[in-house]
Length: 191
Image (cartoon, rainbow, N blue to C red):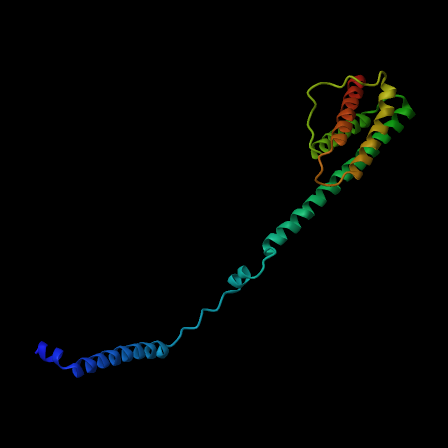
């Protein structure tokens, strides 16, 4: 039978056509099946997914955190300026009180303590800390120390007002340390 197929050239051509037709029908049926399948719609993106794919300049949460951080920094700055103004006022009150009586009253001691506390807080907010060595350039008399308190506090207040937020100021730290040393000198002389 195999020789019969080979001997007849018409049958081989006929078999080749049948094979080509079967291949074409198989290809055609696979294409038809692919077209007849229902396509599943792409799932709708959630608002969060859509937000992530869009150009994101920052989420609302991070934006609110940034706004709150800025407000907090501004509040801290304003509190520091208020401390400097209060320190300036206390120093001028101490100067006026000392010039009037030529001595310190008990309420002046409290003012001195408050002035020192405010000045330390201003220095710490500016990024400073207690100096390791004591000040050697102190006034010689109590009167000159009290008079310089007001001038030093006024200079410190101006410096705090002029210094922007988020700046570590060596000038503020230096002035605050000098003022603290003069306050301590006055407190030691008064006791």
